[in-house]
Length: 170
Ligand SMILES: [Zn+2]
Image 1: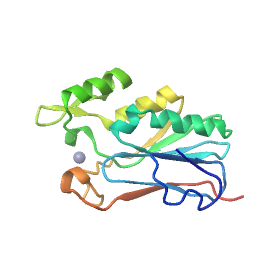
Image 2: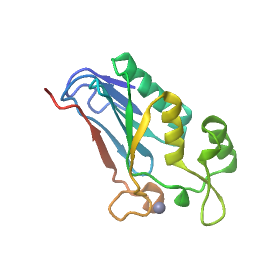
Image 3: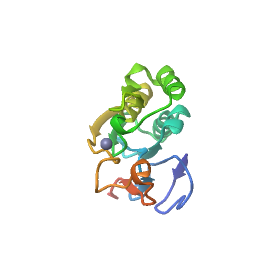
């Protein structure tokens, strides 16, 4: 968790999430199939999360929301950006069981191949709900299928899309 205290703070630091209460400090994550989650609050505290399945299990969403609350956020809203959707996300049954135990049966899906698949957007939604945040916007774009987005699983792309959140300086 990167706690950004000024514009440019924590620049280039490796982290799965960042939060700030500093107006004008832009937070960004780079993703290819993992879920980018932008968090905001009426109090001006913002956060950003790189949510892969392992990060979700590690509680990255809950930790980001908690950090925002410790900075003064009272209500947290979330927007989920483009990520991989279940039709392209074949998943090992054992790992899917682990995810379902943590985030509920809603994360279970089936790929067109008939194999078990992880519903990553549903897992993010469940993690947000458990953290007390509201999911207010969901991109319907699947990175695996979209020709306009990078995808690791579809093409082993090295490129990443950036998702950015900030509060404008007053
Ligand atoms: Zn797709």
